Length: 497
Image (cartoon, rainbow, N blue to C red; front, side, top):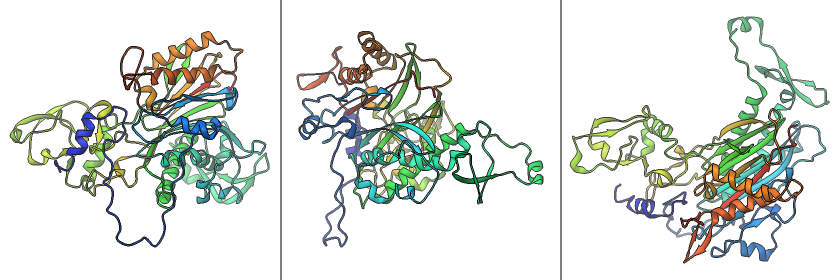
């Protein structure tokens, strides 16, 4: 095993800090016979439709040496006058693997007409949101998808995830419109009419004896149902990618950062290492946290201890401060397992000589010396380099969700939410982001509708840096972000409905 991962480890220690994967599955040997069923061609690379790039502009957007920052051409192009900017990486991947989506969606009551929205054929088309004039629960949606090992997974998720969220919310319409706790049970066989005239499941109370026996019933409020809908939508999206990854040539994987504004609240769902912050009255509020091998060490180690077969007899689920050397057998060394946040000593045994499940530190930490993020979509075929050990069991698609009561807070025109892929956050702090946004706003008053787009553009320019002697540098001289960078700047004032 040690020889098997040497290439991966050397790439890990010497590669760019922005790479999410230091080793990919070994390419399979060519088939001797022509496959009977032809494999579909992958979707061609594309950029978010709202950028409205002409063919020549799209061509220039992919030039790694120029790294032209792309922004909206028309102020007010996106809901809420949202600003957006992006730039391609400095050559770590052939195409820009980030994708973005921003739209308005109405979740209607379930019917046969809508059930076809998530069919396979939609993967080949640019999907449109449901009609704004229909009855139902509406929401605004922003999504960033940071792809790795190809753009296919990010592109697919950007086209479909909001429809999965819509599909999950359709069963909750009559409940979300209430302010009381959600009913414990819904009768699947009974139908009733709501005030709007749409049919819904009838809400039933449990029999008296059940109520008495379980008198300590938990109260679940609509906010928790929305969180659950987001979690299930992420799960459905990942399952669809798994089913259709071959027929639609969906390559690689992607991190996902999504914001949904529904009934006065912002729901921020994150699966990966992209992040979002709110800037309110000049102060920053974290609205997500990164999921990396280090932040999720205990979850990964717990799974490995419960299912050691996932390690392929090649890895150890214990963590040590460094790789153990043969001469250190029978000596006592610091370690920790899934139950520990601190460290203790143990006597080193032969099993401890296996390669560690989590190796590296900071942005260079990897799961099984292969991948640097632990949540997101895709990666169903990803294996440890030159082995048959699948990594997907350790990768979760379930997002962490934070809720912000927009209607319950006062905001001015300078209060915004900033969503960015890790290409932004790798080289800039929350405070620096807030300061950059405030400087732009100080130069462009509230009467300028393009101020949020200019803020997004400035954030991308600042973190991309300038090209000096074949490298990209920040004004301080430090290495700039070499990754794809995508940023939304979302104004928070005037949207408390």
